[in-house]
Image (cartoon, rainbow, N blue to C red):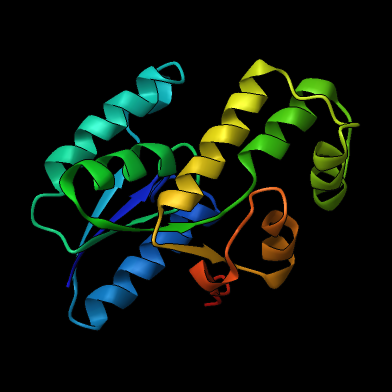
Length: 180
């Protein structure tokens, strides 16, 4: 099988997602699959929107000879990956990592709300999202509904996301993080 792994960071950059992408690629290769890693380079220095379009263009050129795409987040690489996959007719799996919407909200407001409480309060109306956050929520919901599979590292996160994003449990899987 030929697989593209789309990720925002990859070694030598440091971080959990970078190591996850590297280890996952190595495991796929050990099993006889061909893997292409597509990661942010110049995109890191571009404004949102432009960054997404640039990564989308990179994906289009990378997808002609692959069987499926694995995007390692829902927004930064997930959004352009779903758009590219739909355009060229490829299957896509999204692995949730952190939570871009929640992280942005906490950073903007300084309100250290727990993830579960954040989504309960978004649904209840007591958390007020700004225009950008509403757009991110709507686009994230669209992305995960267009993917063939959504992978969570914990049941805890899947349970939190199920109601606000109206997830079909049949489209979700739990695959724990890599343990060396």
